[in-house]
Length: 169
Image (cartoon, rainbow, N blue to C red; front, top):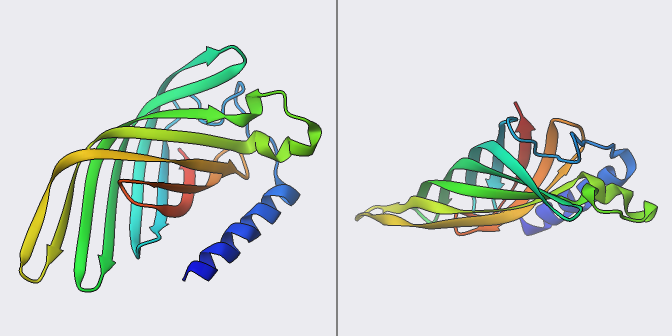
């Protein structure tokens, strides 16, 4: 399974370099007021999903950031045990294209790096019962935009690690 993910990641990197085009909207890949959804395959045999609404943006020198709110969920299966997580996180995005990168790194203009921190419920169901509770949810990762509305995302954190797709609505 790990070899499959490695092959997929390498294939995505080559395709991104060969077919990438600028996906910017006012120097941002994730622009305020443009909601998006993510769906990914958890590295621990499961699914992750999210719905994000970018609320605003700010600049620090030439760097542009977007912040928003995201509902997240995950479902994992392993050895007769099912894990479930749902939560809400605040997000912060950084688009690498706002930097004055050399032409050799033109492909990096389509990368959006993000973090998210918030609260959620995480539980485990097994044959003898269930355990769970409220706690901290956090994740971070990067998305590579192949077009204005679609990206491949790799993320990890307390809410799960996944390889998935991001679609702007």
